[in-house]
Length: 437
Image 1 (cartoon, one colour):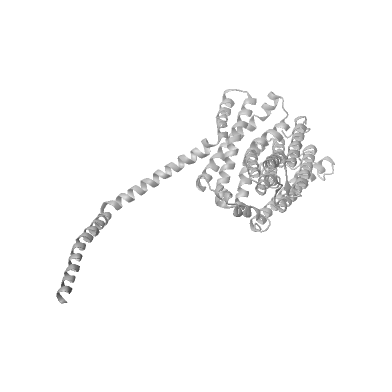
Image 2 (cartoon, rainbow, N blue to C red):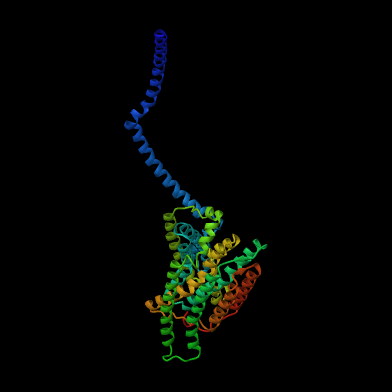
C-alpha cells in the first residue's frame, strides 16, 4: 500500500518537476520585456506619440484645406476674384471687374454656408439654424456696409430688398419645385407654426418699411425731410427689439414650436450619419473668419464697379442691385434649401429660405439704418413706392403659400414665375430719385 503511494508521489513529483521548468521559462519570457519597458520603450512611446500628434495635426490641416478649397466643384470659380482685383488696377473696364467680382464671390458664399453647416453640427439644430441664417447673410451685409460707406443709399436699399425677394420667391420656389419632383408620390409637409411666426415677422417688417414711404408720398410730414428719417430710426430700433425677442423665443421655446428639427434628426438614422462634421469646429471658425475677410475685400471692388458696369452694359442699377447682387449673396441658401427639400426636410428649408428673409428684414435693414445714423448717412426705411409695393405683395403671396403647411412642385413653379415677373419689372424700372446715389 505504502510503496504504491510512494510511487504515486514520485510520479507527481516527476510531473511537477517536468512542468515547473517549462512554465518558468514561459513566465521569464513574458517578464523580460516588462523589465526593459521603463528604460527605453516608454520613452520611445512618448516620442512616437508626440510625433504622431504633430503628424495628425498637420494632416488634418491639409485635409481641411483639401475639403474646403478643392473638394467642391464650384471652387473652380475662385480664381475670378484675384482676376477682378488685377483688372481693377490694370484696366478701366468696370463691366469686367464687376462680372469677375460677382463670379468670384459665388464660391466664397457657398463655402461660407458649408463652414456654417459644419459648425452647426456641433452647436445643435436651433443655434445652427441661427448661425446658418446669420453667416448666410454675411455677404449681403458686407456689400451693404461698403455701399453705405460710399453713400450709395439706394444700392443698399435695393440689394437688401432683392435679397428678401430672392429668398422668398426664387430660393423657396426652387426648393419646393425640386423637392416636389423628387417626392412626387406624396405631399411634403412642414411645421405650420414656424411658417406662421416668420410670416408675422415679415408683415411687421413691411409695416416698418411702408409707413415712412406713405409719410413721404402723402406729404404729411411735420418737418419735411426730417420726420421721415426720424420715423425710420425709431422703427428700426423697435424692429431690432422685436428680432432680439424672436431669437430669445426661438432658443427658449424650441421644445414646443421649433422641435420639428430635433424630431427629424432623432427619428431618422440616416440624418444622424449625414450630420457627422467633416472638419473640426475650430477649423470651421477659422474658415468662417478667412472667407468673411476675402468676401469683404472683393465686395469693395464689386461696389466700386456697380455704376461703371451699369453704364457700360446698359443695365439699370436697380436691376443689378435687386436681381444680380442677391443671387450671388444667396448662393449658399439656394444650394442648402434645395438639398434639404430633396431630402424631404422642409422644416430646415423653411428655416433657411424664409428665416433668412426674416433676418434681413428685421435685423440687417434696421441695422444698416442705425449704422448710417452713426456714419451721418441719410439711410432710412423709405424704399420708394415701387419697391415697397413689390415687397408687400411678395410677403402676401408667400404667406398664402405657407398657410397650409404643405408643398408640391406646382407651388414652387408659381413662386419661380412670380420672381421672373419681379425681375422683369426691375429691368424696365428707372429709379425716380437718384439724389442719394
